[in-house]
Length: 431
Ligand code: KE4
Image 1 (cartoon, rainbow, N blue to C red):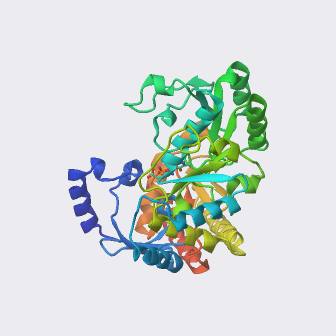
Image 2 (tube, rainbow, N blue to C red; image 1 turned 90 degrees about the horizontal axis):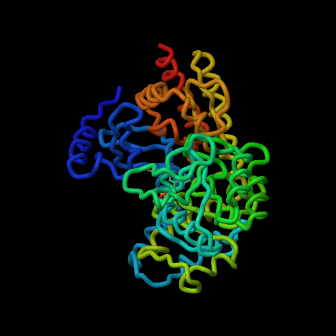
Image 3 (cartoon, helix red, strand yellow; image 1 turned 120 degrees about the vertical axis):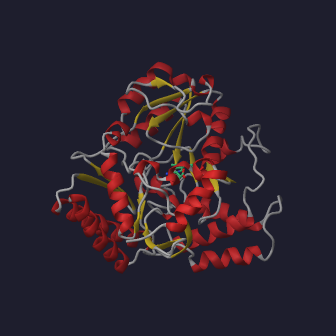
């Protein structure tokens, strides 16, 4: 049994000076009924908290650490860049090299702009879509998260397309009045919206595989249908691949499914754990971005030498034979093992997996296809699962509505270690 004496002391201190004691809400572990553990360091598949407890990590910093923590090539690249200084606010060779790597690996990207977070990437992509088309409305999907820019913070709708209702205080109605939200995987709802107001829609934005309501794959024909509807109506199709980019395949979900979006948003993995986001796509669209075009977007640390060094080393390490086959096999065996354990202990859960990311939805017997389905999961049961796994030394997402990530550092012995721990955790859950 772990003790968390120093984590609790740090949490008390941090709550005195940081709202909720955390710099991002989900880290506070409020939805899983416990205090957060404070992490001191990490290596490979493991994280170590300030009380010296070790955990097999399936959060992986919410996706970036696909190579595992403190990967030697990434650390060496950052150390080398560090010797030359940290930021110049002027063009550097590493951001050119990273941009070229992204253009070469992501099928639809002809030009790309680097920023410092996924939020900046999606916020900028929406502004670009509005500037390029001259239209104001955007269409998103309930349960998809695109960062915390005002336009995206709309309340999940009632199923029929609802004009945006602010999903957070501080978001003015007139900002979200141009944001339409419909259920994920509901192509008919999208068709109806385009029939009603297609001439005003600048873009449709989605996670091509949803991961922010838990992992929810696109249904048969959904992505193809969106591609057709946006093309037919002069709207842009934007893939938010902040999670799926370089996760599902080297070319992301667009390569995996063979769909070409007009713009793609990236983040997480392309920074290798340092702050990098990006948006890119068709050259004729991207050339509307300042300074070559009139749509403004800027950033002090965009293309930062340390961050681009980490991102470059990460993409170079992923651009090798067998990487995605290894990730697929490890995740497939892990999920099969978890399903076997859950059924042996009579725990009702549905595990949904795409490549090396998956979610255990508790209290459900049928697949989750949208936010309404995800919302019917038993979040209390998920909280018990989180706490039981933490006690067994397995660190999973502190929220039912997130994904678990397998990294290349999760070797077969680590998968076995995880399944042994899960056996104990599920036994505890079964009481
Ligand atoms: P950031 O601004 O957090 O770098 O990226 C925003 C974002 C955009 N698009 C997608 C599909 C995302 O998943 C995210 C951020 N993901 C969340 C959780 N899945 C990050 C964790 C957090 O908010 O602390």
